[in-house]
Image (cartoon, rainbow, N blue to C red; front, top):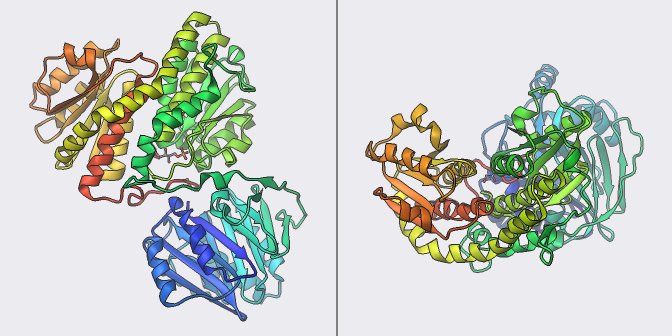
Length: 608
Ligand code: F6R
């Protein structure tokens, strides 16, 4: 992860670098640093913790200079402190890095044996030492860079400045993204186009194995053998994504409340409202010819895929293999070219998801990407993009991206059902009709449940452990509820398939363990209620999230019952996502955690 930015400019850059880092804080926020060159001298300021600490430092000790690089860190090697913060300096070389240098330990031993003295515990510092060594040995900057790139292995975006060349920034990509921004008499680079949006909308994306030599006049891109390569300049839409919190306390709250509007916009792309059918949108995957579907993703995106599995299997009778991407990529499963693969990722940059995509591509599968960031690497490497159109999601805990992913997967499974002849035109119209109703129901639900959930969250915040249960598509929601609660409130939470309760977790049930049961009045309702009985019989406290029919049918005492309107099964996962998001949000607010930037997490996970 980590966010990187660089400017070779004509005006002082420190303030602009920090401003760009603010837009990259979603990538990491445990320390930050900036370095500039002024009058032939390279200087840096670094600070542990959030970017605001660096800003304070720069306020007291400003950095002049029209060329500079900056970094916001998500620690991998070495604790988050000022010494481990980037940029790293060695003998007039400055380096910032996103990713992992896998052979750093071997390189470090070699460099130490040659007399190098390391200041930090980071893997990044070996890059600065290697560059200093090659320069000492007489190589020019470009050749030193290429020599270094041919020594390091791993996944990285690297950005380098040499003190004696104030008009140049060198960079390389192998894994994590890097975008070059073209200005007038100035050039920029950043981990994404949004970081650069106020400066320019003309962007060139580096691809793996590219090394860029950027001066104020332009950029030259070469491969690691020094051979020129050509990459297109594109017009980025990223400026449209510069957002603020409006009148909400947190981005997460804003993102929860904008779901009805955003989903309605996303549906507009997939649904023909007049005919109540799903549009083809130029998709190159014909589900009629596909033997099975492989779905791979991480975290919340994986859980949306798990709901998607239920839909594809039910509506399209299409078998689905699903796995978290970190397992998928190494499982060495046999794949057939008759299969198709779907990769789900909000950021479109998640390293494990990207690696799984490439594995499937090598095996000749058709690749679909369900992504939010259309300019991302995963989007660019897919055969077909299924955009979720959620707009920028700033809160680290995913909310609107999850429900938009669900909406897109619902639409795709209906399309697949039509293509495979497992649902007819009337069934399609009926399902689409429910999708069209969804934004209105979501608005109603958000208004209806907010006061009750806020009051309930105060109680929930007193517990140390929480269990979530669900069946069918409510099972992935139970997993998502637990994930959301633990990541922002730091309360330990587990999600289980309700039927698994008696196979282990029931041993945990007592009055100190609230059990959140997600059970719309669907085919699974009676069975889930039986599991609730088992909880109640052991003194467990139940928070029951159900619908009107479900509430009327249950006589069990609960700590709270949250009653949603009765809705069709196809939209229930999106509607039932709302209480679990709000419950996690308000609990975290009561506990006083940093809701938008919870500890140890980052929004874009570009390392394994
Ligand atoms: C949890 C969350 C993460 C992400 C995961 C994948 O709230 O946001 O679990 O879902 O890191 O990220 P993307 O979707 O960008 O691939």
